[in-house]
Image (tube, rainbow, N blue to C red; front, top):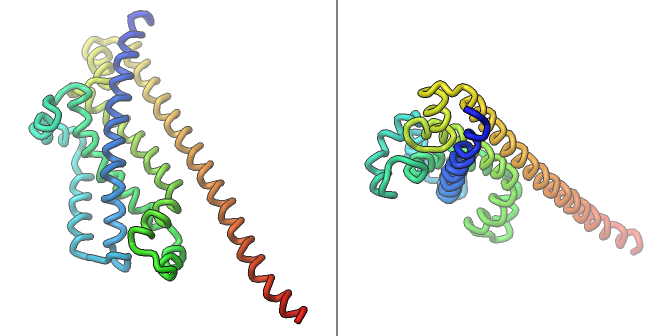
Length: 244
C-alpha cells in the first residue's frame, strides 16, 4: 500500500480514535472526580468518615478495575446498545471505554487528595470551613497538579484501550492495524499505525508534564510568597516591642 493510499485511512481512523478518547476521558473525569472525592472523604479519619460507604464504594471501584477490558466490552454490549443504540463503531466504544476509565481515574483522584497537606485542611476547619468548602477551596486546588497528571495517565490508558476496542469493531487506529495489518498483511500500514500511536502517547505525556510543571511552579511561588508574608507579620510586633 502506498503512502497516498494510507493517508485517508490514517486520517479517518485517527479522528475516530480522538473521538473515543475525548468523550471517554470527559465522562471519566466528570464521574471519576466525585467518586474519588467520596472515597477520600469517607475513608478512616477523614472529614466524612463512614467505613461502610468507604468499603462498599471501594469494592465497586476495585471490581470495575479488575475487569480485563476485552471482556468488559463483551459484557457491556447490551448496556452499550441500550445507552447509545449501537455496540460497534466509535460511538459504541465510548461506553465501555468510559466505564473502564471511571474507577481507574477515581483511584488516582483519591491518591492525589491524600497527598494534600493535612495542616491546610485543619487550618480551614479552624476558620469555620465546611466540608464542601474544604473540598472546593483546599483539597481540589491543592491537588490540581496531581489531578492533571492523573488525567494524563488516564488519557494514555484510554489510547491503549481504544486500540483494543478497535480490534473488536470499535473503529479507530486499532481497527486499522488489525484489519489491514493483521488480516490483509499490510505490514507497512501496521507499522505506521503503531508509530502514530506512540507519537500520540508521547505528545499527550509531554503536554501533561508541561501543564503539571506550570501549575507546580505557580503553587511553589504562591507558597513562598505566603511564607514571606507570614515572616513579615511575625517580625513587625517584635520591632514595636523594642521601640516601646
